[in-house]
Each structure stands twice: as structure tokens, then as C-alpha cells.
Length: 68
Image (cartoon, rainbow, N blue to C red; front, side):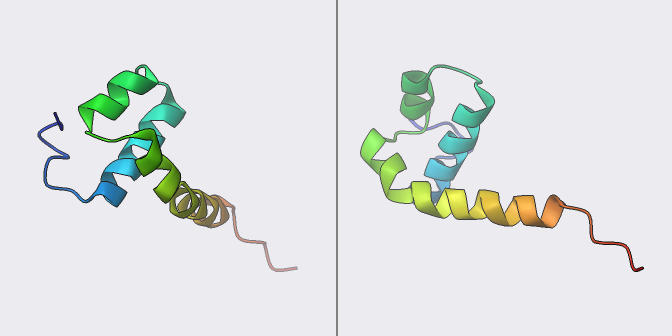
């Protein structure tokens, strides 16, 4: 059963939510997957996209170089 918030989201969006929740260690893996109606296969399918978002965010969070 999906959570009320994620009920109308795509599998990709729910996979990103689950991957972030797993990263934060908010609950057990099976509980998080069940709460968002996802499988391990769903996570594997969307993991590369999530990792790309993580890398993009890390680049944006880095301070800009100061002019010399």
C-alpha cells in the first residue's frame, strides 16, 4: 500500500523517494519498499537516474571558486 503522498506518483518518482529514505536510514528496507509499493527491481531500474541526480546536486552544492 502506497503512502498517501506517493500514491499518485510514478514508479520512477517513488523509487527516488525510496532511495533517499534508504540513504537516510529512516526505516528498514522492506518497510520502505512496502510503504511505497516498490520492488528491488524497481529500485535497480531507476538507481542510475537517482545517482545522476545525486551527482548533479553535489556539483551545485559546491561553492563557486572565488575570482583571483
